[in-house]
Image (cartoon, rainbow, N blue to C red; front, side, top):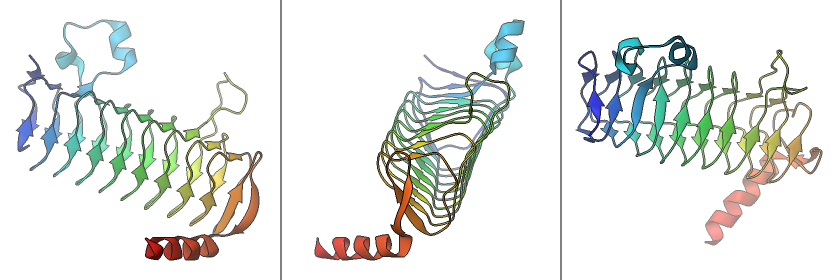
Length: 227
């Protein structure tokens, strides 16, 4: 059986009996919480010793109409906006901020202090490391990998920034420190080693500009109409 802290404030329409909710977590109205863990304490607290996870957890804040499926683990001090939807086995580490209407696919990993803007769509098995900034309406395809360390393992991290409306294709890799410009498109399998200007399409290893995002949008519209 699961556990719900007496300090938690739960307005959800459904909480699984197998869910674990620690600390002063707040869950908004009409949310759905399956067999997930919410408010999991940080590594530092676990290493120091504790009498119970609930005692040391600072809880998480889950908005209204959020869907969190089984196997998800949401650490303490995470904020999740209204209308978000999580696949199975998603991990979100501490101090991350997720905007409204964000969709996150199964087995995606979001490390600490990540910022994700409203309506972003992150598909299955995407890896997002510490400090990454993802703005509004970004799409990230399955198995994409973002990095934040130019000389691993080092003490100086260089987070990636993905600007509003960018599209990141499946199996692509974004090398530490790059910025993907607003509305840019990164083709599937590309390895991005330098900044991508706004409104262009890049492809290849290493990625190079091959076109304009407006042409991509036009071809997409034609393709969708043909079906």
